[in-house]
Length: 172
Image (cartoon, rainbow, N blue to C red; front, side, top):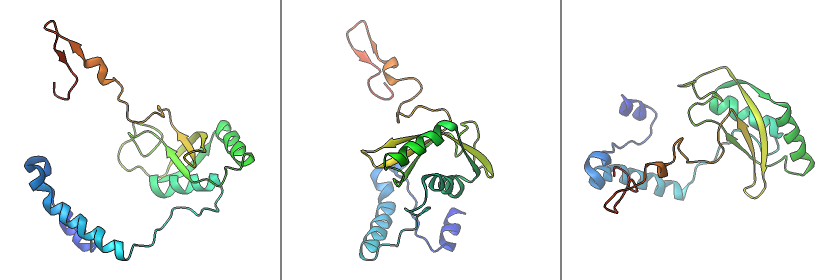
């Protein structure tokens, strides 16, 4: 079904069996990716953006939430509005937007799965990341330090009576 759908769209497809067959099982995918990338080097596609650079920060956030996530409405808390005003006063209002939300959902609620539509997303805070060159719109309640599990891997490290360390490597 996937192959038929991809073919109908005129896109390229290759099966990857790398998990089961190692590198040999990913060769077809690697060839297709290389061919596509090499072809676009000569004539790169024109990028299409969700918002215009000239849009107000609030409008950029709305366009991302509606177009990418499927939201119907975007609500800004008083703090987020204050943050946006401050960004404007400091000359950062024209920066691009980075949305920070739970990785568990397209909404700001981690228990909402799938591809919801017509929901309301709340922007609780907007941070200026001047060095990176972004305004970061925070939605929902989540940690903003990426890549950390709920329980750190270090909690599984044990020193055995024989002096061997267990738990440093995956599947150890």
